[in-house]
Image (cartoon, rainbow, N blue to C red; front, side, top):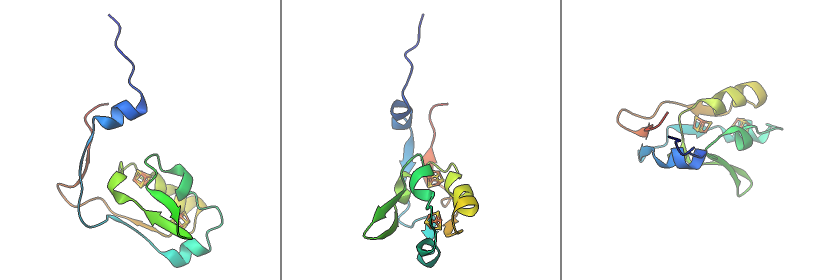
Length: 97
Ligand code: SF4
Ligand code: SF4
């Protein structure tokens, strides 16, 4: 018996989000202004960070809580991200893998 391989989108579609009204991510825009590479815009698998109206904007509702952005911002950016785990009961619930 063969099992159907799920794509990344298929897998993420099985997950459940409990979205808090308050963002668990904030950024210091003054640091972002001096950040030449802006790795947050490319490393996040959920595209939480986007470039909008000439600055970095956050769509925290999509966060997968992987921590990649904090490492990239500290290592290749200017340390402008303040990321904390979502409050208890909020955030993503992984249902597969
Ligand atoms: S990597 Fe960090 S400092 Fe650079 S633009 Fe993104 S949030 Fe700002
Ligand atoms: S923790 Fe992961 S999914 Fe969430 S914003 Fe950072 S890189 Fe994106």
